[in-house]
Length: 310
Image (cartoon, rainbow, N blue to C red; front, side, top):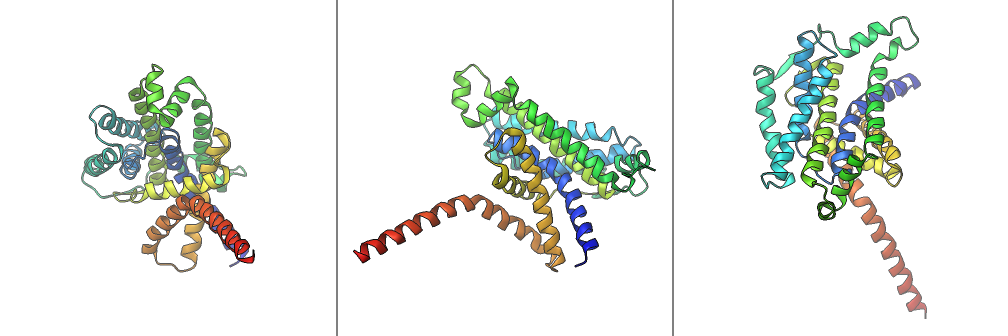
């Protein structure tokens, strides 16, 4: 593989990784901080893409970003209400919302499973025009994506240190303790899920505009990809400060996409990529446990040999 191909492969992985990093940061808030496994991520990602595509097609590409985030917040609010007000378990609530969002997304797009945006102005095409004639003219996609991810990382770094952010983190650690401290866990859970799903919706919106197309199944498996990326990032910066852990989540998204790109370069069938995602998740989750077991087995083996020698 030539050096130019390696650079091209790295840039593609970086761009896709940055888009997915927004969803990874959403799970960083809901899964790592709030301790809620939100399985509505797939549908919420597609919801953001649908809303973003429709608003962009109507001639308002920049307005599509807050519109997609608002749609994601509504999705998170419904998920939170099912959990906190209606007694539905978090996993089941995510599944129910994810299922319902398929119909919602089809309704938003006018029963169209695909939308073409090739002739539609997007935030990326507008950034390309704005950067025309500068040294960044050829990297307009990276500029937009880096700006979006950086803003989210900075927001999370400051928000999770505020009183509300600390309450959300405490709710994820021990909801009973939070309740005894006169903090309403229903409110903190709702706020946390609304914010995290807003980032997921933004991620879907940027993905649709980057690809200049929308597909009703584009969010399929996104929760697995995001969870794998989050766990990979935790291996590198999992025990650091909130800011470094957020950066680690972004790094995990890039590494995951790089593995994807290398798998495709090795002529792996596209249908096998879902299995690769699942394997990465299993290895990332079970890795620390298997490492501890290996240490215990090694100690037992040495102890048995010492007893045998004696």
